Image 1 (cartoon, rainbow, N blue to C red):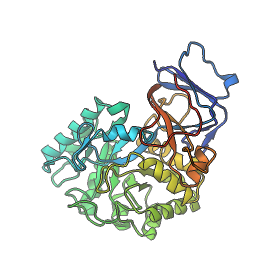
Image 2 (image 1 turned 60 degrees about the vertical axis):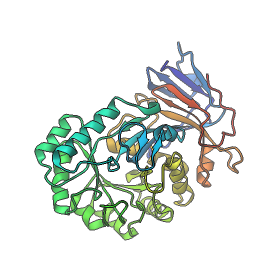
Image 3 (image 1 turned 135 degrees about the vertical axis):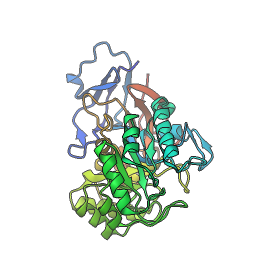
Length: 386
């Protein structure tokens, strides 16, 4: 059931910033992996019984949300809402990366409790894919008293993430930098909260903190919800190797400014997209689609590059085999189009003018997870599924 062919594709968006559009009109999946991308005349579809007729619609990689706050299972205590992850699937999201589990009721803050929660969240979501979505959870919240041995213990259990520094107990940049070096030496990816305070216990963090810590990601530079000054983003780009993140739960104008800045510097490969959800503004099932449209329509970049910031850039940051439509990658993708009633003629034009895409259906590991999104308008084209 994981072999599949998609025919009559109008445009194949690869998710790779360096080569964002692939030639051809056909995608073949075998054993849950992309086996072919190109022209139908060159495709080997022997033995593949299931077929999607894209009817000229666009195929994009499954969206990779770089900033979510899961807890356990498909429920958010912050908004008291069930099935929020499944709802995001209907916005084309197939991968989520935790920026920490701070909304856990009674979250422990002692080293033993921190380790226990982190390992629990990591292992729980390893065993659970809500609606098929790949949730990478278990991001350690830095608290005083954690030692290098604690990081080694968590890494041996498979933990690969450090939650956004600044929303937990460690506030001193020197202490945060030391813990970051321990984590990065073990292959963990580290995020720093930037901008204004978001939840009780968080604070205001600017470029100086980020430069001292040298994380892998400067979180929500457009605000979570209050944005950094653009001059701080320049400093982060100049004085660190960190990716810079823009999110839905932030300042829309600042998101456009950050994208324009990165484009002018030829550094769009360092921009990643997330939602920072669930948050005070709620759950955003279409948040990734909306930020892509902001990046293109307000930030002035080509729409296929906006897709790359929400897919391949995130996958490369976290060393995941998703996010790009090329042979050997996990076959996670969506068939998308201009929404019915749009002034746009296709999906990329819709992004360019600021519309939210219609998601006709989403595939994870070669398996069709849904057809006709419950959260987007219907597509213009008559996409046909088996």
